[in-house]
Length: 330
Length: 121
Image 1: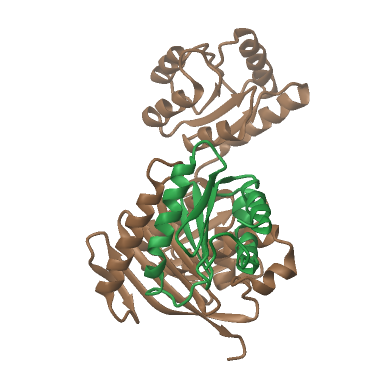
Image 2: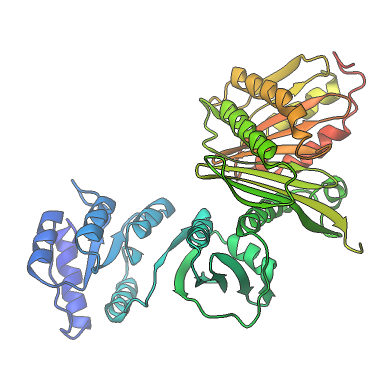
């Protein structure tokens, strides 16, 4: 589908010839025409120009995803931006391709479409990850007390997370396992994931509440970004994040619902006081953020030479975790 | 502010991604400044005041924290309180140079010689 009928005719002729007339190509110069064709015929793949007049390509994708969820969708654009790519992939496009400007480029597009024709989705879900997306998927599985294997990959790496009855039990990424692998996987900026049926891993390398594991991974990611920009040694000598020679131990955990019900507690001397404190944290944060571009509050982190405390306020729950640093030799 | 503090403060607020910052003296007076039109000076003053008010509350969650970080979807607020009563608050955008620099400026604030600064105790 493209409003440029000349381009449409040319590319259709070429692709039909290259497919040796195995492809049956229908052409539409508007969304209305395309929807009419989809009503009348079974179409395997639709290629949509992202810059259509009247109905924007992304909006059209949303309609297609709703009305024809089984249809494979490809976006073709003359102006490929990361924002547009994300929007298209998030709205169900299987491929996002820049309009070719050469014969070789056209052949590459043809090859991709030909491959897509024969592609059959595997069982389970598939989607694009954008930073917190992976955390959300893990949270969803853990809160649902599900068992599954989350396979995560991008062009550089591939790894797996094993979730059993809502608990993270193992992570593997290349030579890394356990928390190191989990933290590395959660630091990926993007990629694809699949939820696969649960299978027992060869070993169990992770223990502890998943909430803490996710927050710890977020902390490590933030610190890695910070340390990368700091002029190394001088800062590390004075920074409480200088944890290479220390071990961290969780000494207190409390998770409560938004109504104040204790969902999980470990070594929390006074859960009522702790929840009241977290409520006051959330209130203070809300006062700081009012009429500002800061957005919603996520968490308060306290750092000191003796340890670290994290208080996270989510709409559905409050999480408090206190970690003590100990010398590695202790 | 003494000259050292002023220069350090100016450098902090000049880092890309900084929305605003302020220093609160032990006598309760403060010097705050906006670094981005979306976060006016009045807002920075309010944040620094809230940080100072909340500081005693932190001790129930951790004894003598070196600093605290209030993390939001689009920004972070770093609060550093020195044993001599000086408090520093900095508001930055997430994933910015300023956000990556938080530990460095916090360490610098803790190490500043503020004995000659106006209003110090």
